[in-house]
Image (cartoon, rainbow, N blue to C red):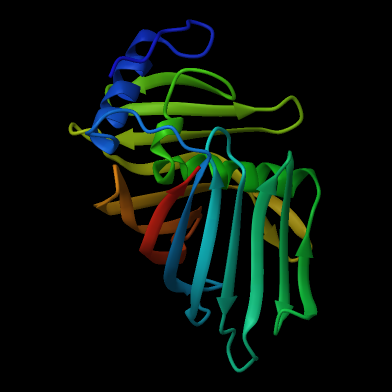
Amino acid sequence: MQTQLDPSVADGDAVAILDRVRSYAMPDGPVETAGTWLRQRGEMRMDVDGPWMPFTAEQWFEGSGVDFRWRAWVRMGGLLPTLVVDSFERGRGGLTARVLGLVPVASSRGPETDRGEALRGLAELPWRPFAFRAGPPFTWKATATNTLRATFDDGETRASVDFQVDADGRAVGAVASSRPRLVGKSFVDTPWFATVSEYRTFGRLRVPSQAEAAWQLPRGPFTYWRGQVTDFKTFP
């Protein structure tokens, strides 16, 4: 399952890692699809000392880029269920939260949101592993033996993450040197990382079924999200 090398989008060492990822994730041969969908359950929190809030979610991923839409029902403290929609679509990021899906309680848009959501979509490529290939809209660089830097740039928004890839070809983590984090009413660029594990086979794809996301704060890592995939499929 060799990936054709284009020096403008990937170096030779990066192509070798890409091939390893693809071979593990698609053991029966390349999968071509318009995108993927998954269902999750998990919990999230807003502050280091804040309570964990359970959620159930569905997420849709575009097959070729970083576009995604995450739609979750979250039980926030004593409030009624809140619908949270997190997305990067057609070059724009967005976050909204509505109690009962009707009453708005939070909203975020703008360049920082675009960058933060594009970075999320990039870090979640293990849920669309066929996108690990040398070609637009990504460029790839091997920064270490088992580290693969992926960069997305659509001319307006640029985001990069470093994937850690094990010897078998499993992407096990993604690290970003900075991601916009909302602190009060302002964004602060903050180191961010995510881990994925417990790969399962769904159809012809192997994808992670467990994930966590965290900010690297001065006082230490702050894990704010953790979830489990309960269903997964591709769509034409």
